Length: 439
Image 1: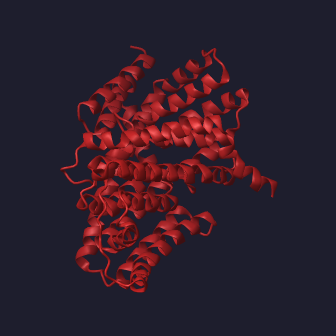
Image 2: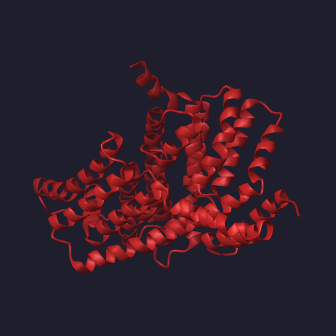
Image 3: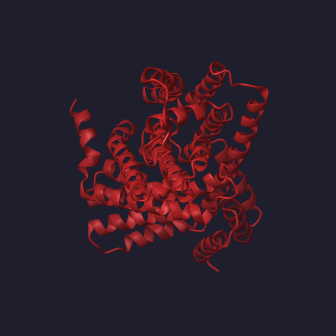
């Protein structure tokens, strides 16, 4: 068996194992390691060890653990409940109000983390209990959290964009600027869908119909006390990254300290809930890292089996117009996004894509945003759906994977339509960078 055929067979086996219910991390890691041992002998063990080491020391994954801890602290100490209760006090009588609030908070938190995995698990910890308690449709709950958490891939400071820029020879600052309008627009599309869906079918997100007996002044004061401190913390973490005051890991550390300070401020911190937060963050971080490790091992052996060469040869054989080539490239990005970890995709595809994009005359800044949006879609698409697997780790047992998949379908449709919109109207991406460059 040639190594190229082995790469294809390995790919098919991994997909089959995951589709029949095996855990994504173990399926990808174990199958690829077995193929590596068969083809490369003992050296495969060293390659796998280096792959694992490469993941656990990767800078963004350090931030993941800290942002997860920040979320578990906010959740276990009740600060998150205060935040969502306050937001929902303003939207209590609106159909789908909790889901709308979740998307808004997810967009803000996504701007803090820049990492889809950390955003999904943290927003899941913050928002899921409240929505399930309010008897929201479980599919809508899952879809809202996964789609909202994925906004961190687009909204700056996106870690995906940070790694994409140097590999594509694009300014990270320009890429951040280009991501702002698409990120805000996609957030608005999510909000519009949830609002209309719950207006048409109120059972999806029933209003609470709370009769507020407090005076308007007292209500605003209570909302301000519960809402402003957490928002200041989140915006402070985001702003410190955006203005270059702190790196993501440093900002995440400050976020953890800020979460502890808020718990003290609200007199909710105790040894019991602090210990529960540590245990939850350890479990969730381990789940995220195991998935990333399995994907990284798979990526390593796929490349060693000349999988990357197969991709390059396939594009070289295409004899179609530039638009069809662009669609084929994005489609490949989408397919691999369901299999590989996003770090592997960037280091595999971007160097292959850069000369093709230049030869076709496309703006690399515009393509970079398309690349990020398509990668976000793959996070929610079966059979892998990383965002759904991340959410599975914090979801209650009664919420099934089928419900999660079904709930994500409308958001995947919105994301796909959004990509088409960006292709038809490139100025959505390029308008703001053109203004900043003019200045």
